[in-house]
Amino acid sequence: MFQKSTNHLNKYEKRREFVFLLLAGLFIGTLAMLNILGITRIIDLSFEFFGIHVPFRVFVGILPYPLTFLCTDFISEFYGKKRASYVVWIGFVLNLWVIFILWIGGILPPVPVMNPETGLPFKEDANFLFYQLRSYTFSATFASMIAYLTAQFVDVHVFHFLKKLSSGKKLWLRNNGSTLTSQLVDSLSVILITFFMTNAIRIPAGFSTVKFLFILVISNYFFKLVAALLDTIPFYIGVKYLTSYLKIDPVSEYRTADK
Image (cartoon, rainbow, N blue to C red; front, side):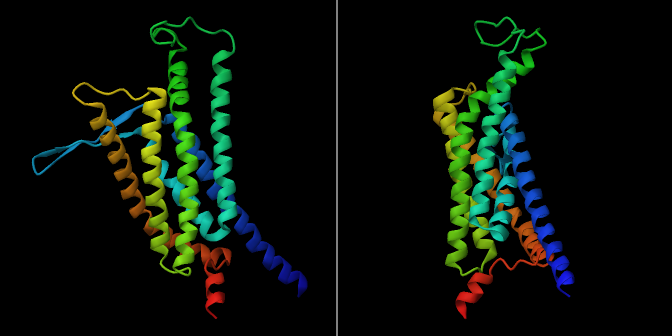
């Protein structure tokens, strides 16, 4: 009977570790992708609304970004604040690793002849693409790391604050409240820091600096807001399924406290 009980326990422990590794892997893999893509391209999704032109421009790196917050919300829900914070720090170290590889890849021989006007190889050089990507990544990563750390820790802390405030109820509140708050912090941080400290954002003709930065902040935040509201559905479904699959009651401490 003891052996049977142990095997039963091990099955759920293995499931918990597998799901944690899957969520952490998705988080870290997505983070690496968005940091490399970063500000390499601005996507123009402007549209007309009742005859009014609505400018809507987002960086390509933002596209996979909402998945990182969904992953940390799942980890926070089932594994706790401490493990979610560990994953955030690992993501930060990954940023440094990406920068290190790009840096060392650029200084190893042969180093191409650089165009003094751009600081990059000449366009006909086969190395141009690498150095251009390297330049964009270097320019944005400093801002990205500050914004990332700030936003992710805001997400984790607000999530647990709202979970405690609602005594483990109102799943939608902690999911959306934490994500929407943290992504506003992220949108402001990454765009303003990137512009003022790296000069990597170029203002198109016909736009003032304030207007274009405002468009970028609002567009990037609106994209994240819509994504956050939409991810409530997979979050609810995921929590319901994983509660049974992992045999973890994420609000048990609040039920105990109520008794």
